[in-house]
Image (cartoon, protein in one colour):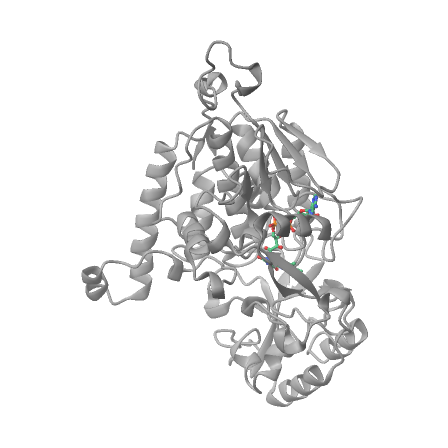
Length: 485
Ligand SMILES: Cc1cc2nc3c(=O)[nH]c(=O)nc-3n(C[C@H](O)[C@H](O)[C@H](O)COP(=O)(O)OP(=O)(O)OC[C@H]3O[C@@H](n4cnc5c(N)ncnc54)[C@H](O)[C@@H]3O)c2cc1C
Protein backbone atom coordinates (compact mmCIF):
# COMPACT_ATOMS: atom_id res chain seq x y z
CA UNK A 1 0.00 0.00 0.00
CA UNK A 2 1.48 3.36 -0.91
CA UNK A 3 0.38 6.55 0.75
CA UNK A 4 0.59 10.03 -0.64
CA UNK A 5 0.72 12.56 2.13
CA UNK A 6 -0.19 16.10 1.35
CA UNK A 7 0.86 18.64 3.94
CA UNK A 8 -0.16 21.93 2.49
CA UNK A 9 2.73 24.35 3.03
CA UNK A 10 0.25 27.23 2.90
CA UNK A 11 -1.29 26.03 6.12
CA UNK A 12 1.71 26.99 8.19
CA UNK A 13 1.60 30.64 7.11
CA UNK A 14 -2.09 31.22 7.42
CA UNK A 15 -3.52 33.47 10.14
CA UNK A 16 -6.67 32.86 12.10
CA UNK A 17 -9.05 35.78 12.64
CA UNK A 18 -8.85 39.27 11.17
CA UNK A 19 -5.49 40.62 10.00
CA UNK A 20 -3.71 42.69 12.64
CA UNK A 21 -4.23 46.40 12.16
CA UNK A 22 -1.49 48.86 13.05
CA UNK A 23 -1.56 49.69 16.72
CA UNK A 24 -3.73 46.82 17.87
CA UNK A 25 -2.34 44.73 20.73
CA UNK A 26 -0.18 41.82 19.66
CA UNK A 27 -2.20 39.24 21.55
CA UNK A 28 -5.08 39.33 19.03
CA UNK A 29 -2.71 38.25 16.30
CA UNK A 30 -3.37 34.57 16.53
CA UNK A 31 -0.66 32.22 15.47
CA UNK A 32 -1.39 30.14 12.42
CA UNK A 33 -1.60 26.52 13.50
CA UNK A 34 -3.46 26.19 16.80
CA UNK A 35 -2.54 23.37 19.07
CA UNK A 36 -4.70 20.31 19.20
CA UNK A 37 -5.32 18.49 22.43
CA UNK A 38 -6.69 14.97 22.10
CA UNK A 39 -8.04 13.47 25.30
CA UNK A 40 -8.30 9.66 25.37
CA UNK A 41 -5.83 7.00 24.22
CA UNK A 42 -8.39 4.34 23.30
CA UNK A 43 -9.50 3.92 19.70
CA UNK A 44 -10.85 7.29 18.58
CA UNK A 45 -8.17 9.37 20.34
CA UNK A 46 -5.04 7.82 18.78
CA UNK A 47 -6.69 7.82 15.36
CA UNK A 48 -7.61 11.51 15.72
CA UNK A 49 -4.11 12.35 16.95
CA UNK A 50 -2.39 10.49 14.12
CA UNK A 51 -4.66 12.04 11.49
CA UNK A 52 -4.09 15.58 12.78
CA UNK A 53 -0.35 15.04 13.08
CA UNK A 54 -0.11 13.70 9.56
CA UNK A 55 -1.82 16.89 8.43
CA UNK A 56 0.96 18.87 10.04
CA UNK A 57 -0.60 19.78 13.41
CA UNK A 58 1.07 19.54 16.79
CA UNK A 59 -0.92 17.27 19.05
CA UNK A 60 -0.90 16.70 22.80
CA UNK A 61 -2.42 13.29 23.46
CA UNK A 62 -3.69 12.63 27.00
CA UNK A 63 -4.39 9.20 28.45
CA UNK A 64 -5.14 8.66 32.13
CA UNK A 65 -4.11 4.98 32.31
CA UNK A 66 -2.15 3.55 34.10
CA UNK A 67 -2.48 6.16 36.90
CA UNK A 68 -6.24 5.77 36.73
CA UNK A 69 -8.04 3.02 34.85
CA UNK A 70 -11.63 2.32 33.86
CA UNK A 71 -13.98 -0.53 34.82
CA UNK A 72 -13.23 -2.33 31.53
CA UNK A 73 -9.59 -1.64 30.60
CA UNK A 74 -6.99 -4.03 31.94
CA UNK A 75 -3.78 -2.58 30.45
CA UNK A 76 -2.23 0.85 29.99
CA UNK A 77 -1.93 0.25 26.23
CA UNK A 78 -3.20 2.57 23.56
CA UNK A 79 -6.09 1.17 21.50
CA UNK A 80 -7.00 -1.53 23.99
CA UNK A 81 -9.95 -3.60 22.76
CA UNK A 82 -11.94 -4.09 25.94
CA UNK A 83 -14.15 -6.97 24.81
CA UNK A 84 -14.39 -8.85 21.53
CA UNK A 85 -11.43 -8.74 19.12
CA UNK A 86 -13.62 -8.29 16.05
CA UNK A 87 -13.86 -5.23 13.83
CA UNK A 88 -16.79 -6.87 12.07
CA UNK A 89 -17.52 -8.05 8.56
CA UNK A 90 -15.16 -7.99 5.62
CA UNK A 91 -17.80 -9.41 3.29
CA UNK A 92 -17.95 -7.20 0.24
CA UNK A 93 -20.91 -4.82 0.02
CA UNK A 94 -21.91 -5.09 3.67
CA UNK A 95 -22.18 -1.87 5.69
CA UNK A 96 -19.23 -2.63 8.05
CA UNK A 97 -17.11 -3.50 5.00
CA UNK A 98 -18.04 -0.22 3.35
CA UNK A 99 -17.10 1.77 6.43
CA UNK A 100 -13.72 0.05 6.57
CA UNK A 101 -13.09 0.46 2.83
CA UNK A 102 -13.68 4.19 3.14
CA UNK A 103 -11.34 4.33 6.12
CA UNK A 104 -8.65 2.45 4.22
CA UNK A 105 -8.94 4.85 1.30
CA UNK A 106 -8.64 7.77 3.72
CA UNK A 107 -5.52 6.33 5.32
CA UNK A 108 -6.93 5.40 8.74
CA UNK A 109 -3.86 4.60 10.83
CA UNK A 110 -5.60 2.27 13.27
CA UNK A 111 -7.36 0.32 10.56
CA UNK A 112 -4.01 -0.22 8.82
CA UNK A 113 -2.66 -1.60 12.10
CA UNK A 114 -5.75 -3.76 12.54
CA UNK A 115 -5.19 -5.19 9.06
CA UNK A 116 -1.59 -5.89 9.97
CA UNK A 117 -2.63 -7.68 13.20
CA UNK A 118 -5.47 -9.71 11.69
CA UNK A 119 -6.15 -13.26 12.88
CA UNK A 120 -8.24 -15.79 10.92
CA UNK A 121 -11.94 -15.07 11.51
CA UNK A 122 -13.83 -16.20 8.43
CA UNK A 123 -15.31 -13.19 6.69
CA UNK A 124 -14.71 -10.84 9.63
CA UNK A 125 -11.70 -8.70 10.51
CA UNK A 126 -10.54 -9.88 13.94
CA UNK A 127 -7.20 -8.88 15.42
CA UNK A 128 -4.60 -10.07 17.86
CA UNK A 129 -5.36 -7.38 20.45
CA UNK A 130 -1.86 -7.28 21.97
CA UNK A 131 -0.20 -6.95 18.58
CA UNK A 132 -2.75 -4.31 17.52
CA UNK A 133 -2.06 -2.13 20.58
CA UNK A 134 1.68 -2.60 20.21
CA UNK A 135 1.61 -1.41 16.61
CA UNK A 136 -0.56 1.61 17.44
CA UNK A 137 1.83 2.57 20.25
CA UNK A 138 4.74 2.25 17.84
CA UNK A 139 3.03 4.56 15.34
CA UNK A 140 2.37 7.17 17.99
CA UNK A 141 5.95 7.00 19.24
CA UNK A 142 7.22 7.43 15.69
CA UNK A 143 5.15 10.58 15.09
CA UNK A 144 7.27 13.59 16.13
CA UNK A 145 4.27 15.96 16.22
CA UNK A 146 2.50 13.95 18.94
CA UNK A 147 3.40 14.49 22.59
CA UNK A 148 1.96 11.91 24.96
CA UNK A 149 0.81 12.86 28.48
CA UNK A 150 -0.10 10.07 30.84
CA UNK A 151 -2.49 12.00 33.05
CA UNK A 152 -6.19 12.36 33.73
CA UNK A 153 -7.77 15.50 32.32
CA UNK A 154 -10.36 16.85 34.71
CA UNK A 155 -11.06 20.25 33.23
CA UNK A 156 -11.98 21.67 29.85
CA UNK A 157 -11.35 25.32 29.05
CA UNK A 158 -13.94 26.29 26.50
CA UNK A 159 -12.56 29.87 26.35
CA UNK A 160 -9.01 28.88 25.41
CA UNK A 161 -8.90 30.07 21.79
CA UNK A 162 -5.39 28.76 21.22
CA UNK A 163 -6.31 25.10 21.60
CA UNK A 164 -8.72 22.79 19.88
CA UNK A 165 -9.78 19.84 21.98
CA UNK A 166 -10.85 16.46 20.66
CA UNK A 167 -12.62 14.69 23.48
CA UNK A 168 -12.38 10.93 22.92
CA UNK A 169 -12.62 9.57 26.44
CA UNK A 170 -15.08 6.86 25.54
CA UNK A 171 -17.98 5.21 27.30
CA UNK A 172 -16.05 5.06 30.57
CA UNK A 173 -15.01 8.71 30.72
CA UNK A 174 -13.66 9.45 34.20
CA UNK A 175 -16.22 10.87 36.62
CA UNK A 176 -14.42 14.23 37.00
CA UNK A 177 -14.39 14.81 33.26
CA UNK A 178 -17.99 13.62 32.96
CA UNK A 179 -19.00 16.33 35.44
CA UNK A 180 -17.00 18.85 33.46
CA UNK A 181 -18.76 17.79 30.27
CA UNK A 182 -22.11 18.08 31.98
CA UNK A 183 -21.19 21.61 33.04
CA UNK A 184 -20.28 22.47 29.48
CA UNK A 185 -23.14 20.88 27.63
CA UNK A 186 -25.73 21.98 30.14
CA UNK A 187 -27.65 18.78 29.60
CA UNK A 188 -27.56 15.57 31.55
CA UNK A 189 -25.95 12.59 29.81
CA UNK A 190 -27.79 9.52 28.95
CA UNK A 191 -26.16 6.58 30.65
CA UNK A 192 -26.72 2.95 29.82
CA UNK A 193 -24.90 -0.31 30.28
CA UNK A 194 -22.77 -2.49 28.06
CA UNK A 195 -21.41 -5.96 28.62
CA UNK A 196 -18.32 -8.06 27.71
CA UNK A 197 -17.99 -11.73 26.67
CA UNK A 198 -16.05 -14.52 28.45
CA UNK A 199 -12.80 -15.91 27.02
CA UNK A 200 -11.86 -19.59 27.27
CA UNK A 201 -8.42 -21.26 27.24
CA UNK A 202 -8.34 -23.20 23.92
CA UNK A 203 -6.37 -26.11 25.38
CA UNK A 204 -9.24 -26.84 27.79
CA UNK A 205 -11.92 -27.24 25.09
CA UNK A 206 -12.95 -30.86 24.47
CA UNK A 207 -12.36 -30.88 20.70
CA UNK A 208 -14.08 -34.26 20.27
CA UNK A 209 -17.43 -32.58 21.00
CA UNK A 210 -17.10 -29.46 18.86
CA UNK A 211 -16.44 -28.70 15.20
CA UNK A 212 -14.94 -25.97 13.04
CA UNK A 213 -17.32 -24.41 10.50
CA UNK A 214 -18.22 -21.13 8.85
CA UNK A 215 -21.91 -20.33 8.56
CA UNK A 216 -23.20 -21.48 5.18
CA UNK A 217 -19.60 -22.49 4.40
CA UNK A 218 -18.88 -18.78 3.76
CA UNK A 219 -15.23 -17.85 4.35
CA UNK A 220 -12.76 -20.13 6.07
CA UNK A 221 -14.05 -22.38 8.89
CA UNK A 222 -12.42 -20.47 11.74
CA UNK A 223 -15.16 -20.63 14.37
CA UNK A 224 -15.39 -23.45 16.87
CA UNK A 225 -19.00 -24.57 17.15
CA UNK A 226 -20.37 -26.22 20.29
CA UNK A 227 -23.54 -28.06 19.20
CA UNK A 228 -26.49 -28.60 21.55
CA UNK A 229 -29.40 -31.02 21.48
CA UNK A 230 -32.87 -29.81 22.51
CA UNK A 231 -32.38 -31.30 25.97
CA UNK A 232 -28.98 -29.68 26.44
CA UNK A 233 -30.37 -26.34 25.27
CA UNK A 234 -33.35 -26.49 27.66
CA UNK A 235 -31.06 -27.36 30.57
CA UNK A 236 -28.73 -24.51 29.66
CA UNK A 237 -31.51 -21.91 29.39
CA UNK A 238 -32.94 -22.98 32.77
CA UNK A 239 -29.54 -22.67 34.44
CA UNK A 240 -28.81 -19.35 32.76
CA UNK A 241 -32.04 -17.65 33.72
CA UNK A 242 -31.81 -18.91 37.31
CA UNK A 243 -28.15 -17.92 37.82
CA UNK A 244 -27.23 -15.19 40.28
CA UNK A 245 -26.28 -11.76 38.91
CA UNK A 246 -23.53 -9.45 40.19
CA UNK A 247 -24.90 -6.99 42.75
CA UNK A 248 -25.19 -3.44 41.40
CA UNK A 249 -22.33 -1.10 42.22
CA UNK A 250 -22.95 2.44 43.49
CA UNK A 251 -23.20 3.89 40.03
CA UNK A 252 -25.64 1.18 39.05
CA UNK A 253 -28.07 1.88 41.85
CA UNK A 254 -31.03 2.52 39.64
CA UNK A 255 -34.23 0.56 39.22
CA UNK A 256 -33.81 -2.51 36.97
CA UNK A 257 -36.61 -1.41 34.68
CA UNK A 258 -34.69 1.77 33.84
CA UNK A 259 -31.42 -0.09 33.13
CA UNK A 260 -30.86 0.87 29.54
CA UNK A 261 -29.16 -1.93 27.60
CA UNK A 262 -28.04 -1.40 24.03
CA UNK A 263 -29.76 -4.20 22.10
CA UNK A 264 -26.56 -5.35 20.34
CA UNK A 265 -24.90 -5.86 23.72
CA UNK A 266 -27.79 -7.30 25.71
CA UNK A 267 -26.56 -9.66 28.47
CA UNK A 268 -27.23 -13.24 27.44
CA UNK A 269 -29.32 -14.00 30.53
CA UNK A 270 -31.51 -11.02 29.64
CA UNK A 271 -31.95 -12.33 26.07
CA UNK A 272 -32.84 -15.78 27.47
CA UNK A 273 -35.54 -14.23 29.66
CA UNK A 274 -37.23 -12.75 26.61
CA UNK A 275 -38.42 -16.16 25.43
CA UNK A 276 -37.55 -19.83 25.46
CA UNK A 277 -36.27 -19.76 21.87
CA UNK A 278 -34.85 -16.24 21.74
CA UNK A 279 -31.27 -17.49 22.09
CA UNK A 280 -31.76 -20.04 19.28
CA UNK A 281 -32.75 -17.18 17.00
CA UNK A 282 -29.99 -14.93 18.31
CA UNK A 283 -26.44 -15.67 19.48
CA UNK A 284 -27.05 -19.46 19.54
CA UNK A 285 -28.48 -19.61 16.02
CA UNK A 286 -27.58 -22.97 14.39
CA UNK A 287 -28.65 -22.23 10.79
CA UNK A 288 -26.02 -22.86 8.13
CA UNK A 289 -23.72 -24.68 10.57
CA UNK A 290 -23.73 -28.33 9.43
CA UNK A 291 -22.45 -30.65 12.15
CA UNK A 292 -20.11 -33.13 10.37
CA UNK A 293 -21.15 -35.85 12.84
CA UNK A 294 -24.85 -35.69 11.90
CA UNK A 295 -24.75 -33.87 8.57
CA UNK A 296 -27.45 -31.57 10.00
CA UNK A 297 -27.74 -28.30 11.87
CA UNK A 298 -27.80 -28.83 15.63
CA UNK A 299 -30.73 -27.60 17.75
CA UNK A 300 -28.59 -24.68 18.99
CA UNK A 301 -24.92 -23.69 18.78
CA UNK A 302 -22.44 -21.70 20.85
CA UNK A 303 -19.78 -20.17 18.61
CA UNK A 304 -16.22 -19.53 19.77
CA UNK A 305 -14.09 -16.97 17.96
CA UNK A 306 -10.28 -17.03 17.94
CA UNK A 307 -8.83 -14.37 20.24
CA UNK A 308 -5.16 -14.11 19.23
CA UNK A 309 -2.66 -15.17 16.58
CA UNK A 310 -1.45 -18.08 18.69
CA UNK A 311 -5.06 -19.37 18.70
CA UNK A 312 -4.68 -20.32 22.36
CA UNK A 313 -7.82 -18.53 23.50
CA UNK A 314 -11.34 -18.11 22.17
CA UNK A 315 -14.21 -15.81 23.09
CA UNK A 316 -17.81 -16.95 23.36
CA UNK A 317 -19.55 -14.94 20.64
CA UNK A 318 -22.46 -12.88 21.99
CA UNK A 319 -22.11 -14.30 25.51
CA UNK A 320 -21.71 -11.01 27.36
CA UNK A 321 -23.42 -11.34 30.74
CA UNK A 322 -23.81 -9.86 34.18
CA UNK A 323 -23.58 -13.03 36.27
CA UNK A 324 -21.31 -13.69 39.24
CA UNK A 325 -18.04 -15.31 38.11
CA UNK A 326 -18.72 -18.59 39.98
CA UNK A 327 -22.17 -18.75 38.41
CA UNK A 328 -20.69 -18.14 34.95
CA UNK A 329 -18.23 -21.01 35.39
CA UNK A 330 -21.06 -23.33 36.45
CA UNK A 331 -23.48 -22.34 33.68
CA UNK A 332 -20.95 -22.08 30.83
CA UNK A 333 -19.57 -25.54 31.64
CA UNK A 334 -22.98 -26.92 30.63
CA UNK A 335 -21.99 -26.09 27.03
CA UNK A 336 -20.85 -29.26 25.20
CA UNK A 337 -17.07 -29.14 24.85
CA UNK A 338 -16.64 -26.68 27.71
CA UNK A 339 -17.34 -29.11 30.59
CA UNK A 340 -13.76 -28.71 31.88
CA UNK A 341 -12.98 -25.34 30.38
CA UNK A 342 -10.76 -22.77 32.04
CA UNK A 343 -12.08 -19.26 31.62
CA UNK A 344 -9.38 -16.63 31.13
CA UNK A 345 -11.90 -13.84 31.47
CA UNK A 346 -15.51 -13.78 32.58
CA UNK A 347 -18.29 -11.69 31.13
CA UNK A 348 -18.89 -8.32 32.74
CA UNK A 349 -21.17 -5.34 32.52
CA UNK A 350 -20.19 -1.70 32.42
CA UNK A 351 -21.30 1.86 32.43
CA UNK A 352 -21.56 3.50 29.03
CA UNK A 353 -21.59 7.28 28.74
CA UNK A 354 -22.39 9.22 25.59
CA UNK A 355 -23.61 12.68 24.75
CA UNK A 356 -26.91 13.54 23.18
CA UNK A 357 -25.23 14.20 19.84
CA UNK A 358 -28.29 15.39 17.87
CA UNK A 359 -28.81 18.15 20.42
CA UNK A 360 -25.17 19.03 20.99
CA UNK A 361 -22.96 18.37 17.97
CA UNK A 362 -22.47 19.87 14.53
CA UNK A 363 -21.69 17.61 11.59
CA UNK A 364 -18.04 18.50 12.06
CA UNK A 365 -18.32 16.91 15.53
CA UNK A 366 -17.92 20.29 17.29
CA UNK A 367 -19.98 21.20 20.31
CA UNK A 368 -22.47 23.75 18.97
CA UNK A 369 -22.08 25.93 22.06
CA UNK A 370 -18.28 25.54 22.29
CA UNK A 371 -16.87 24.98 18.79
CA UNK A 372 -13.28 24.61 19.98
CA UNK A 373 -14.30 21.26 21.49
CA UNK A 374 -14.93 18.26 19.24
CA UNK A 375 -16.27 14.93 20.46
CA UNK A 376 -15.21 11.63 18.93
CA UNK A 377 -15.64 7.90 19.47
CA UNK A 378 -18.23 6.16 21.55
CA UNK A 379 -18.76 9.30 23.63
CA UNK A 380 -20.12 11.03 20.51
CA UNK A 381 -22.89 8.47 20.13
CA UNK A 382 -21.40 6.02 17.66
CA UNK A 383 -21.27 2.40 18.78
CA UNK A 384 -18.50 -0.10 18.11
CA UNK A 385 -14.76 -0.30 17.67
CA UNK A 386 -14.69 0.47 13.95
CA UNK A 387 -17.25 3.23 14.26
CA UNK A 388 -15.20 4.79 17.09
CA UNK A 389 -12.01 4.71 15.01
CA UNK A 390 -13.94 6.16 12.05
CA UNK A 391 -15.24 9.01 14.13
CA UNK A 392 -11.74 9.67 15.49
CA UNK A 393 -10.49 9.76 11.92
CA UNK A 394 -13.03 12.43 10.95
CA UNK A 395 -12.51 14.41 14.16
CA UNK A 396 -8.73 14.44 13.57
CA UNK A 397 -9.20 15.75 10.05
CA UNK A 398 -11.81 18.32 11.06
CA UNK A 399 -9.65 19.51 13.96
CA UNK A 400 -6.65 19.83 11.63
CA UNK A 401 -8.68 21.93 9.21
CA UNK A 402 -9.99 24.14 12.03
CA UNK A 403 -6.51 24.49 13.51
CA UNK A 404 -5.41 25.86 10.20
CA UNK A 405 -8.35 28.26 9.93
CA UNK A 406 -10.03 26.29 7.22
CA UNK A 407 -13.67 25.34 7.11
CA UNK A 408 -13.80 21.55 7.30
CA UNK A 409 -15.51 19.89 4.37
CA UNK A 410 -17.94 17.43 5.88
CA UNK A 411 -17.88 13.81 4.82
CA UNK A 412 -20.40 13.16 2.04
CA UNK A 413 -23.87 12.02 3.02
CA UNK A 414 -23.74 9.11 0.55
CA UNK A 415 -20.73 7.58 2.30
CA UNK A 416 -20.88 5.28 5.32
CA UNK A 417 -18.76 7.70 7.36
CA UNK A 418 -20.91 10.65 6.33
CA UNK A 419 -24.13 8.74 7.02
CA UNK A 420 -23.03 7.70 10.49
CA UNK A 421 -22.16 11.28 11.42
CA UNK A 422 -25.34 12.51 9.77
CA UNK A 423 -27.34 10.05 11.85
CA UNK A 424 -25.84 10.97 15.21
CA UNK A 425 -26.22 14.68 14.53
CA UNK A 426 -29.73 14.54 13.03
CA UNK A 427 -31.51 11.73 14.88
CA UNK A 428 -34.51 12.40 17.12
CA UNK A 429 -32.74 13.78 20.19
CA UNK A 430 -35.36 12.62 22.70
CA UNK A 431 -34.93 8.96 21.78
CA UNK A 432 -31.30 9.04 20.72
CA UNK A 433 -29.39 5.75 20.96
CA UNK A 434 -25.83 5.09 19.78
CA UNK A 435 -25.55 3.62 16.31
CA UNK A 436 -23.54 0.98 14.49
CA UNK A 437 -23.14 1.42 10.77
CA UNK A 438 -26.01 -0.20 8.85
CA UNK A 439 -27.53 0.35 5.43
CA UNK A 440 -30.50 1.98 7.15
CA UNK A 441 -28.31 5.00 7.84
CA UNK A 442 -27.29 5.41 4.20
CA UNK A 443 -29.54 7.34 1.79
CA UNK A 444 -31.96 4.95 0.10
CA UNK A 445 -31.83 4.44 -3.63
CA UNK A 446 -34.18 6.59 -5.68
CA UNK A 447 -37.73 5.18 -5.98
CA UNK A 448 -37.36 4.27 -9.64
CA UNK A 449 -34.14 2.37 -9.06
CA UNK A 450 -35.62 0.68 -6.00
CA UNK A 451 -38.61 -0.51 -7.98
CA UNK A 452 -36.36 -1.79 -10.74
CA UNK A 453 -33.93 -3.63 -8.46
CA UNK A 454 -35.74 -6.07 -6.19
CA UNK A 455 -32.67 -7.94 -5.00
CA UNK A 456 -31.47 -6.51 -1.67
CA UNK A 457 -27.86 -7.55 -2.26
CA UNK A 458 -27.80 -5.76 -5.59
CA UNK A 459 -29.25 -2.63 -3.98
CA UNK A 460 -26.52 -2.75 -1.36
CA UNK A 461 -23.90 -3.17 -4.03
CA UNK A 462 -25.16 -0.03 -5.77
CA UNK A 463 -25.26 1.87 -2.48
CA UNK A 464 -21.65 0.85 -1.81
CA UNK A 465 -20.56 1.86 -5.30
CA UNK A 466 -22.24 5.23 -4.90
CA UNK A 467 -20.77 5.69 -1.42
CA UNK A 468 -17.21 4.95 -2.51
CA UNK A 469 -17.46 7.26 -5.53
CA UNK A 470 -18.68 10.12 -3.31
CA UNK A 471 -16.01 9.32 -0.74
CA UNK A 472 -13.23 9.44 -3.33
CA UNK A 473 -14.49 12.79 -4.60
CA UNK A 474 -14.53 14.09 -1.03
CA UNK A 475 -11.02 12.86 -0.36
CA UNK A 476 -9.75 14.56 -3.49
CA UNK A 477 -11.62 17.79 -2.75
CA UNK A 478 -10.73 18.02 0.92
CA UNK A 479 -7.05 17.97 0.00
CA UNK A 480 -6.15 15.44 2.62
CA UNK A 481 -3.90 12.44 2.63
CA UNK A 482 -5.16 9.64 0.50
CA UNK A 483 -3.96 6.10 0.27
CA UNK A 484 -4.04 4.03 -2.85
CA UNK A 485 -4.62 0.35 -2.47
C1 LIG B 1 -17.45 -3.03 28.47
C2 LIG B 1 -17.52 -2.65 27.03
C3 LIG B 1 -17.44 -3.63 26.06
C4 LIG B 1 -17.48 -3.28 24.70
N1 LIG B 1 -17.39 -4.26 23.78
C5 LIG B 1 -17.36 -3.95 22.47
C6 LIG B 1 -17.19 -4.97 21.49
O1 LIG B 1 -17.04 -6.13 21.81
N2 LIG B 1 -17.18 -4.62 20.18
C7 LIG B 1 -17.31 -3.33 19.79
O2 LIG B 1 -17.28 -3.07 18.58
N3 LIG B 1 -17.48 -2.35 20.70
C8 LIG B 1 -17.51 -2.61 22.03
N4 LIG B 1 -17.68 -1.63 22.96
C9 LIG B 1 -18.00 -0.28 22.52
C10 LIG B 1 -16.85 0.58 21.98
O3 LIG B 1 -16.54 0.17 20.68
C11 LIG B 1 -15.60 0.59 22.83
O4 LIG B 1 -15.90 1.13 24.06
C12 LIG B 1 -14.47 1.42 22.18
O5 LIG B 1 -13.31 1.19 22.90
C13 LIG B 1 -14.77 2.90 22.14
O6 LIG B 1 -13.67 3.61 21.67
P1 LIG B 1 -13.34 5.06 22.24
O7 LIG B 1 -12.04 5.48 21.68
O8 LIG B 1 -14.50 5.94 22.06
O9 LIG B 1 -13.19 4.86 23.82
P2 LIG B 1 -12.05 3.98 24.66
O10 LIG B 1 -11.51 2.99 23.74
O11 LIG B 1 -12.73 3.60 25.88
O12 LIG B 1 -10.97 5.08 24.91
C14 LIG B 1 -11.16 6.14 25.81
C15 LIG B 1 -9.87 6.37 26.56
O13 LIG B 1 -9.97 7.56 27.31
C16 LIG B 1 -9.34 7.37 28.57
N5 LIG B 1 -9.91 8.36 29.51
C17 LIG B 1 -11.14 8.36 30.07
N6 LIG B 1 -11.29 9.45 30.82
C18 LIG B 1 -10.14 10.16 30.73
C19 LIG B 1 -9.68 11.39 31.29
N7 LIG B 1 -10.44 12.14 32.09
N8 LIG B 1 -8.43 11.82 30.99
C20 LIG B 1 -7.61 11.07 30.18
N9 LIG B 1 -7.99 9.89 29.63
C21 LIG B 1 -9.26 9.45 29.89
C22 LIG B 1 -9.63 5.92 28.91
O14 LIG B 1 -8.68 5.42 29.81
C23 LIG B 1 -9.54 5.26 27.54
O15 LIG B 1 -8.26 4.77 27.26
C24 LIG B 1 -17.63 -1.94 24.32
C25 LIG B 1 -17.72 -0.95 25.31
C26 LIG B 1 -17.66 -1.31 26.65
C27 LIG B 1 -17.75 -0.24 27.69
